[in-house]
Image (cartoon, rainbow over all chains, first blue to last red; front, side, top):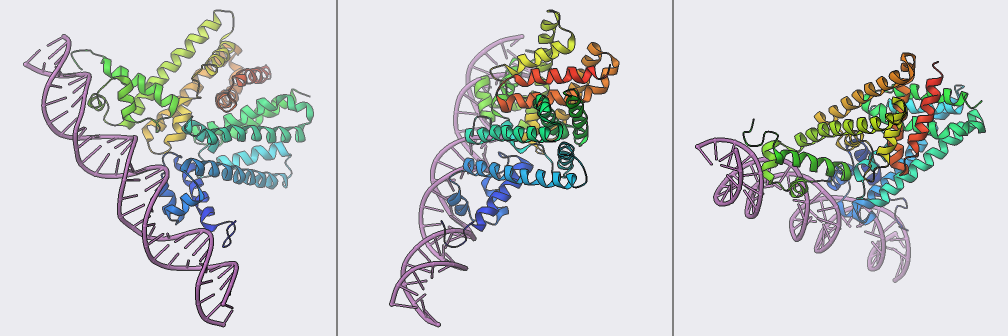
Length: 191
Length: 191
DNA sequence: ATATCCATACAGACCTGTCTGTTTATTATA
DNA sequence: TATAATAAACAGACAGGTCTGTATGGATAT
């Protein structure tokens, strides 16, 4: 435990800056020098907090998961307060995300794509994230459509993953609405 | 046009080797030296055929599309000869693909993820590929389920994209069957 | 005899990670 | 309250390696 600033200010700046750069330009495309320059931090400060870039990447992914969950939850609450059930609110939040100017798909799928086997801790975390995301989405489905709807939860999760990547390749947010309509049809089949 | 070997043997080896390495380890993760070493080619031979690595990447993606189309078509024909209609044959071929030992998702989505804006020609080609893929799949859907099924073609395309990435993050081919079931439900709704 | 290909060295930039030493700010002690 | 000790961050040079791309010269084959 440090005695000066407990959650070190520099460390926070490093993670936030790296998250932004890694997501927007790619992990391999961004060097340590870029991170320390834009975080206004000395190189040794970074290496005092993180043993290596690979370790920084893992911390950045953990931070990204937290921030992403916060973002999605907050957007969902917004839409739920306007009368949408939790599943509709989820898809509305998904569309909000797709429409962000800096949207570049799922950070964890991107990391899986570019890191391959070079950073197993990071890629394992990405797979774990996807499992957690699937569980959360399944709960949302059950909450707004009943337990019998759990039968189509895996299919809806696949729809959501497909919408995420389609929004990237097509450059628009149309996939959110299409996936939502399909999800509703699948759910209606379980009743 | 060269007068010795028209479709130069060295060029072919370069593209095939680069395709294999880029797909399995990532484009940025593989340097030119790796490519020339494993292709048994001199560095100048590579740079005589391709002005830069970015240009090689584009050629590799074009080659990948050809090879992928050949693979999928061939697998589909195999399954169609066993009595499956074209859509069922498509999903069976998709599952075959997922089960390849070297499966690492869609090369074009992976390239979009790691190249970002650093190679616009390549990323444009990836988006174009996805558009072509969507058109082909739509034709398959119409062929095996009728023109009215075209209404759910965009949703089925999203299911397929989702299955492709889910097969990566989950490390198995289950998503193929789940996506297929969902696609059948969506199609049955159009009748 | 012309073009392709091979082998190798090289330039210059960039990469991760280390080292040294200075500054700053908080904490402990006199 | 003044001072010493401690810890964190800063600045910047540096090592060793890898990257892309170029240059040179010799081998091979049509």
